[in-house]
Amino acid sequence: MRIGVLDVGSNTVHLLLVDAHPGAKPLPAYKEKTELRLVDLLDGDDAVNGEGVDRLVESCRNAVSIAEDKGATSMLAFATSALRESSNGAEVIKRVRKDAGVDLHVLSGADEARLTFLAIRRWYGWSSGRLLCFDIGGGSLELAVGIDEEPDVAVSLPLGAARLSRTWFSSDPPSDDEVRALRKHVRAEIADVVGKINRFGAADQAVASSKTFRSLARVAGAAPSAEGPYVRRLLKRGDIADLVAKLAALPAAERAKLPGVAKGRAEQLLAGAIVADAAMDLFDVPFVDICPWALREGLILRRLDQLAGAGFEGSDEKL
Image 1: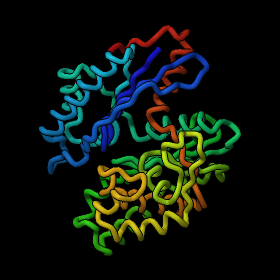
Image 2: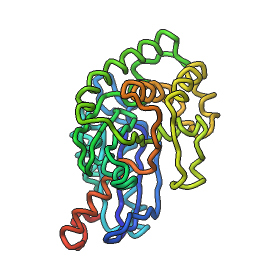
Image 3: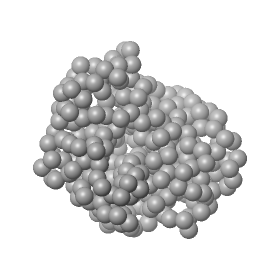
Image 4: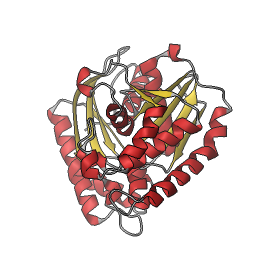
């Protein structure tokens, strides 16, 4: 069966279609993303503005059409921090349901962390032992640690790269004072949960997912995506510390020229690097493995588990 996943994030609306088979890993069949940047389409009251709602509806309507054309039989549609924390999120979801025929499910931050952890666990397997997982999104940072498929603890912090860039930087590149202030804020937020996570024991392997970490690893010299998902990619703590200084000196247009940095992500990459640096330092992680699977794959895997438990008879979430 072919399953569609529609991910409405702070930066993009991302459609992923996978071919699913009992007992086998989901195989990607098609993907498409739209740079929507909902986090930049909020008004002064943190409500998605009219343009943002219209663009989101059109993106969802287009995703449904593509999924139908590509033979998908079901759709899992979800939204993360951009709608979760917007003051008119409920109204936006109703509009999307009415005008695009898509029923968006808003994930909690803890659910984001749990589902991402599941995807990472399945990718690395039981031999990886206790996993410590980091994921930097546009609106939030997810942290999770555990020995099983369900993490012992899952935490979400409002430290997404797009959110921080929008609220803490006023110039391009930002001033030294703005960078220092953001660094102080990020480290205080992460330090507040370190004890809660570390009390479950030291991790055997630290893993990072998300576009931000992949871009940072690529700038630091990791293999390009064209070499495939099975090439090991690492981001070292020493490299990320150097990257913060390098990125802070560059305007967004220059960051976009770096390997692996998309134009739409260049503006927020510095904030993402500051978060990555703080997380790796405060958790005393010398390096992280970059996982090609993240939240979308976790949602698919959870759905496949549910279908397997029901005899794999198919989804009632029809297109």
